[in-house]
Image (cartoon, rainbow, N blue to C red; front, side, top):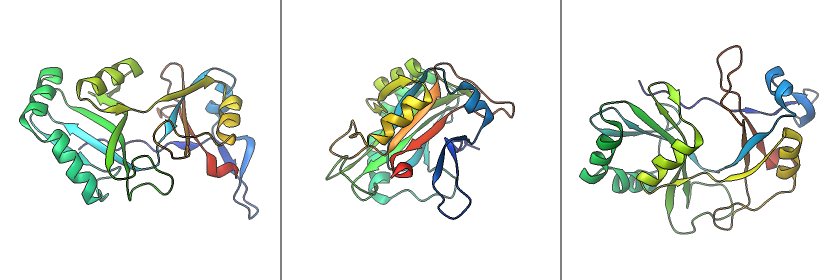
Length: 211
């Protein structure tokens, strides 16, 4: 079974008295709070639909964030054209052999995102993570894989502590792709870390949560 991409928690707790708004400074995780003053890497959070591209050592298959998720037809067509061909299968075999690998990314574009305009008249896929043999790869390896398959990788938009990341998101920056407004960022420590339950340490910070 192909591993689903883990859910990324919002940085702060929400008010339970009716507003449902975030409470700045009230971290949802004690691990995140303990690390909040360190430098984190912020990548742009793309407004789209989660996509898994899996190589089982013999063939390529696609999936959404969950096994039951429906992928929009126009995106399925794009993925088939991009990946289901002899040349790409040979690239996967050449690079990974019979090792299982999953590319995690976001399908985005026309009729997929909620607002703005990444791609006015089409759709695409942008990579944000790769897992091989149960191991999450480092950013430089993710970039190398993106280059191999001629796909984009989510841009790094900043480095700093979590207060800086929140301030950046609250400024409502423009996306690095097209003319859309940025949905937010995903922040990770400079090195891969896991909490006491074995979950990856990472948070999402969304513009709409501060409006």
